[in-house]
Length: 219
Image 1 (cartoon, rainbow, N blue to C red):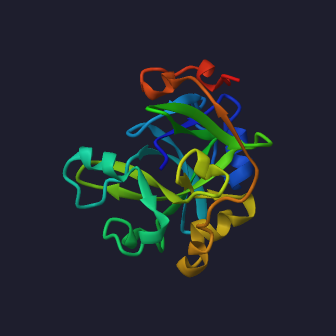
Image 2 (spheres, helix red, strand yellow; image 1 turned 90 degrees about the horizontal axis):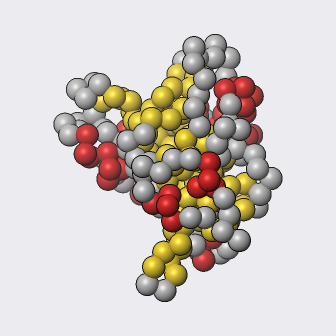
Image 3 (cartoon, rainbow, N blue to C red; image 1 turned 60 degrees about the horizontal axis):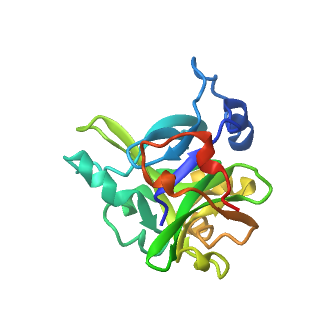
């Protein structure tokens, strides 16, 4: 499960271009940090078409071409890696509509007795996190959207949640964006690298809260 993400002020256009090997010109306005990325928010997402990579602002929550109501997207913020080839909403996207969602990290809630405690999860070395996703365009609704692919959790992460986003590393970018599906699918395994997992304020549960202090550790 991945229901919230964040992109801090350190994730700049220059950082996006360097990590993702994008040659497009920078936008006219600076990309703004988002400390509480929630479903329906638009964020920079990397796609590749005709051999050219670009960043586009895509809305979180997949709206397949057949969707007539934007509320459908709330049910498709994540896509389970194990069943991608079985789901009619995802299967048509596997060959040519894969994407990468660059973020600083994501949030997850750990059950604590009768309640839950929010945690932020990021790379231990602080580098940006690359999440595997799928994207599409819904012409009738006039919007491009994406979903984050999830996998089972590692033994370490299971203490927080039994699902986690599919996290890629830089040398897997080309294969995920434009490789044959059979090879790309092999990348969808629980991330074995080192992650920083720290408790943060449950204020992140309210989408109206969006400020740097949400990232402060409670420890």
